[in-house]
Length: 336
Ligand code: NAD
Ligand code: DAU
Image (cartoon, rainbow, N blue to C red; front, side, top):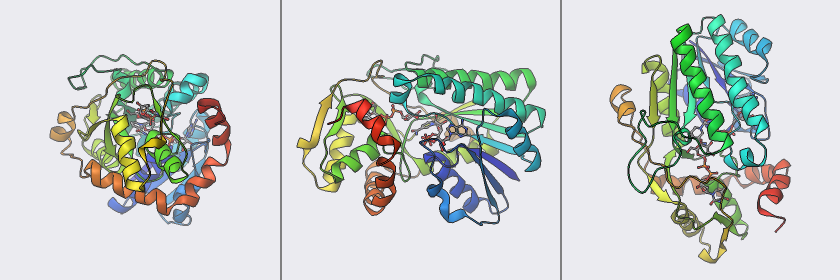
């Protein structure tokens, strides 16, 4: 089986490429990634020369390139992760989110249709459902109600993917996962940002009152869910993935501070994110019953292991935060 992972040099993609090579020794994995600010070749550097792995640097919006990769690599299945993924950046500058997440997805779907790909997993997010009140869970039937340019672009791409299943009978499966954490996450997202700032005694910015709720899942559990969706998902269906680990942002940040032995006085409440969704929580009953999938990691232990990873891999994130990210950080949080 030849599998194309798009966005394999990003956070979830890098974890997924590794998992596929270990768990499916008969598979060949091709990673198509443009290496934007969020893509990092270093994330998979140890795979250089691996007999069942190939990296192609390229943009999913380039139809000719995508068709060429699908054809020459004789791709059977696509796991589509390439995207602009950060909500705050989508508020600062929406256009690239439409280009990559909407148009790029359509380009891929079209090439997959023309070349007869046998399975297309479109990797999406619980953010397409918008915000929950204090109770209730997102199911696959929850109406789409995205709040940010990022989540609106993901909702649009979900609809395109499902339209390709219905109209062209392209075997598409859509997954919608909650907030991931774990190794290789870009330090603009809450958990790695909090760890990196705490380790340098810098303020930890918490938006608004910090009582927003996210439902956390370890990235490896997400990746196992994607593999299950690829192998067992039914075409045209949506599967929610989540680990039932709802936490207030403030509690997550306090836990990070405890784990690195730094004081809570580092917490700094800053202006709220515009359109900030108050609460996410996932009902993953369908994935658990139909795909036979279940998360394996518990939040407290897996967060501690994640913090250890960032402590031990300090050069990895220090290299990242000294580059383009510095300019973004100053724009988002002020020069400090
Ligand atoms: P990320 O930002 O860490 O990585 C995205 C990757 O896509 C990068 O390697 C980047 O170089 C690549 N990319 C961007 N534009 C591209 C283009 N035009 N052509 C080719 N490659 C391009 O993102 P992530 O957190 O790993 O998320 C991966 C996917 O999972 C996204 O589709 C995201 O919407 C979805 N998702 C993320 C989460 C989460 O908590 N991080 C949860 C649910 C779903
Ligand atoms: O729910 C899945 C989504 O999770 C994915 O689709 C996105 O790609 C991913 O980025 C993530 O989106 P969030 O906006 O939830 O993640 P982020 O880490 O940016 O923020 C998590 C929460 O923490 C959110 O309520 C905003 C808050 N936050 C974030 C940052 C970066 C802060 O309070 N301060 C911060 O500095």
